[in-house]
Image (cartoon, rainbow, N blue to C red; front, top):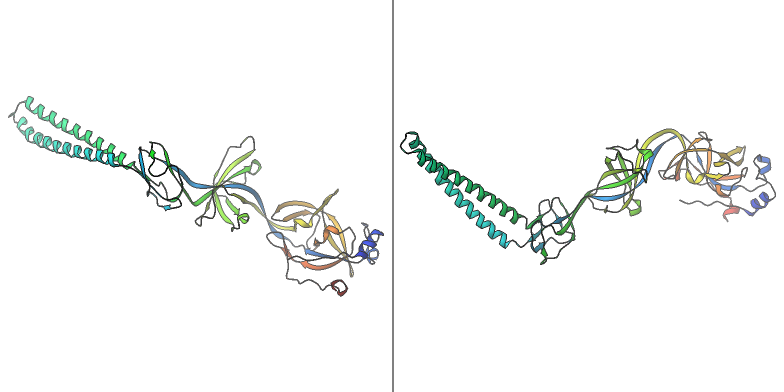
Length: 388
């Protein structure tokens, strides 16, 4: 809510004549000057959150481009934008030749298995005869050799069957995780070489934000630290994430270290490469005085604010030098120069001089999270000569 304040010609005329600009002017000196309309904030101790404000880039937690392990003609591609489940086929190559080769390998394996069964049966029947010296050692050794040969043949057939099975399976490209088809590197009908890129799949149900953090904050951020994302630039609500990685190495050029935080994104509103504002809480400071950033002005003596100095019915502005502490979201901590219960000018102070006479339109009782004064007090009535 915006509020107006008025500067009357009489005030300017009086000020030019030296009526109320001096640092030591009292109520008698200001009595002939028309009051300047202002809004004030009554100071009371509060809790202030000291934070680190950072900027980071959104990244997909899972983002891969899948390649073909076999060569062939591309016969199928999952459409762009399609959501796919883990292990679902997202691309397929012509498999006729490989399927035939695998069928042949299966037949060879079955034949080798049958040969092994016969050789094992013959061995089992001949062994007792050899033990009883019914057959010679030479005859039994030949039976044993046939069994070993049959076993080797089966192992060879199994290896060929496995190889052709894998080659056939490689004609299907499957999703390694649930995600969304984002890009095609090949078109249906094209020849794909082994290792050629085919399709890109991205999962953004959980994203991470990559942040470069100044080295002075190395002791404030660790794995598990909460990170709040301010998405107001995109019209989104704030999100909460948690640090999953904090580098122990400082980048020598920027003097920063990398931090990664994961954030839930099941609604898909966060997109890779978005830039987001990240906020990390350092401390909760109790019993401090906080003023809006806009209430503070600077001169050759440093930062200062205008406070209310009242003599009976006369209200004057007095400039007070202050020492500032932490700041965040339009709010400043004042570590020295003000006391609880004092009243600070928050609107209309830009045209004030020390000793100006004031009329308080609104007396605020506190600040919201963005440093905007708030109160339940209604504006005071404006003199009819001013409002008419």
